[in-house]
Image (cartoon, rainbow, N blue to C red; front, side, top):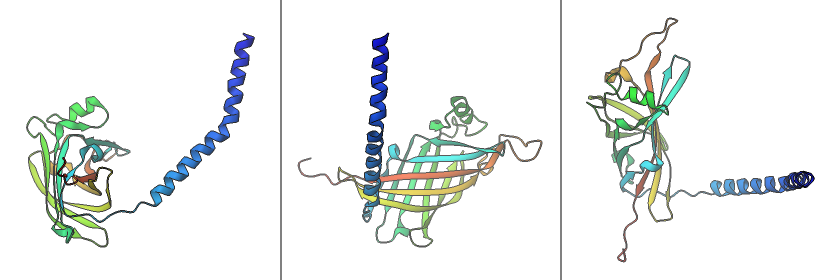
Length: 227
């Protein structure tokens, strides 16, 4: 027992002695990471077709619950294309398609309910689709993407204010740039009416849905003759 206690004391003392060095090392690492991030030099975006990188993008939404909180979710299975015009960004275009079946709110019973006829009715309407019609410039680095949004068999015009968050060339030579966009739609406009009023006013499920797009678009590097 005495040997065990001695071993524990040695380990504890070693941990106490090492703690300042560990903290110092972590602080140095964090400072170095911040310094590198501050030195990022974004590149200009060449024109062409860019695929939306689903592994590094989010098509998300949020809706009020009982008027006191937000429930968030996302669609995990989607594809999309951005045709970027570097000479005039307003001539660019965007389109994407998401599989409604891939909806994920973190709670599987809720996901299953959202797939039914009470909400998205996946059996009849398996996809939601967006196709841009024009891009509007709203000042330096700020734009609005206008287009047709189809959900549950209903197509309506929506406007998506967005910013380009930067562009880089990745280690493989592929061009990448980011887009951050957000807008609000009314779910009832698309035939999603399930829910009821609360006794004290308001709704158990809000009508307005906030849509947030965080997209990373990639254009593959040209193949060399050796490839």
